[in-house]
Length: 224
Image (cartoon, rainbow, N blue to C red):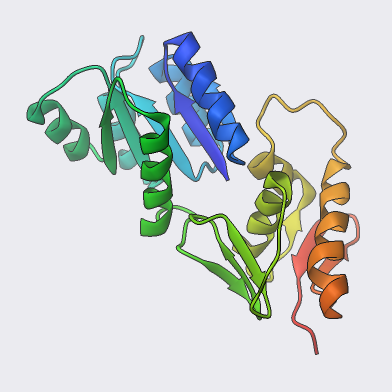
């Protein structure tokens, strides 16, 4: 799952990035409202963590602009302010949730999982393809009722494939969703993780669900 964090406090932004990446998210950072708005317009994020007090364009205006553009990505707003009027303004401009600083990372993680369960742009409570079931909020995977242990990147690649629901997921789309925009490595890294998923999800169950569309990417197919 790809997340945008818009926060001008560098240390907090980097701490959030570290924590979210450890939880399996691909994270992009923006340090002012204009940059955050531009990134949110360009990339299909699943969640946006948005500070209110930002340089150039505050969080209220960023949120309102995104909603006016028809971008319904769940937004969790952060602020150092307190009071019901600040919370009301955040929600009225289109935010889905609100968290006051200082906050516990455990609470922030729980809020993001709750937003995933509620749904939004590209979100759903569970993802299924035949007997393959993934729960993004609980970070669990099952095939034929049996739990399958995945690494964070394996989980994210599988989530991307499942969200395409049998349609082709281009390699560059998978890179955009699973790795952040700072990734400078070999694009063939996707093949490594797809191979790992086949070993864990197909081979032990006698299936051939993950197929290669030569020159394009990958898609899930139902076994005959």
